[in-house]
Length: 234
Image (tube, rainbow, N blue to C red; front, side, top):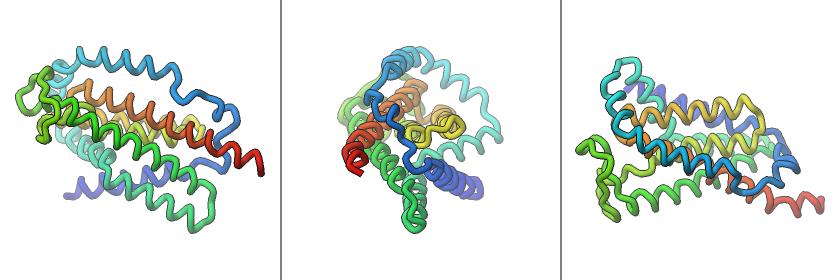
């Protein structure tokens, strides 16, 4: 219970901190001209395809290298990717910004929109793909599309999509290297924890990370593009 509580506090604190670092007007004109989906999306697709080769060895390595310390890190990582904690963090960050009358409360809404888009995607893909989770039989090639059983909702990882969606969205708003490093680093811990806990295959979390980052960037850039006429009139 103690580890779970610390993980929850860490998740909310991290999200609140990341969501408030973007200064007013952080989206520059150059950033607004960027395409919704850039070339990194193609590199991500290739990464997902290659990660399939690591499904079995990645699981075997994680199962063979368990320690009490890593168990604690994995529990914290799992908490950081849980929707209820992330939503609470976004709500808290927005509330503080609204009370303080800071423009970054608008940026938190952009982050929340990106998170919502990612959540919609994963909610559709999980049952549609119907991939069996590793703890069931240990076979990564078993599929049962359109089933309601959670044992067949392995691809993609919702925790990974949640974490990487937030990391990418906050990075798009903040435009600060250290923010990107912290956000993506925390997201990587979340993705690793799902493989370590035998809830997902390596390709599940890699796909979740790529989908989350691409979705977040496209959503935030689209929202920035919509805001340009209003800024021009002002």
